[in-house]
Length: 97
Image (cartoon, rainbow, N blue to C red):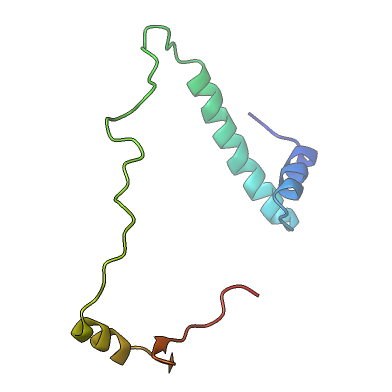
């Protein structure tokens, strides 16, 4: 499937990508190849294939979320390996502003 330059620019704008002319051409060709492959997949006869609702028995299996206390030795070893401490706790760079 071939895309015209307006469609490629539109997809780039939706993706908030500022692309050069060479990048638009290259990515346009790659996107066209992907869409051609999707067209090929759409032609495959799947009428005899049973619909899959689950791909396995284990679905959203999570371990229980519970705190595990450290013994004093383990805590001390961990604290000795930190770069910076404050009031007996590990000090890390701010994540949120």
